[in-house]
Length: 113
Image 1 (spheres, rainbow, N blue to C red):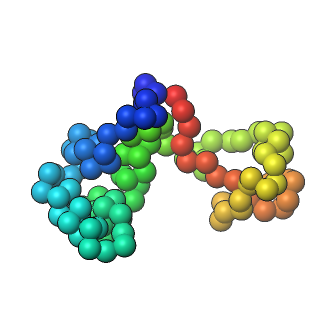
Image 2 (image 1 turned 135 degrees about the horizontal axis):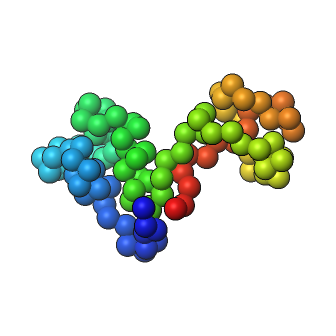
């Protein structure tokens, strides 16, 4: 996947439509609802059952020229984990534990390609 130009991202709805996950009508419906509520059109699309949260993550990654990485499926070298400053790491509910803090390592969901 090529890197996207940071100043030229397609609207998320357009990305979802190109991925054939939603129709133009569903995008317009979510935009109308989000205009009257304090919620993003992506959240509206999920709440309406048109797309799953994971599909939104895939579309966001595509929009930014990144890929989604499931950290439960890759092994992160403890040396690398320990190089992340503690103030930048946030514990999650992952079953893996960090030798540095005894808590779970920080989870990153996307990476540039």
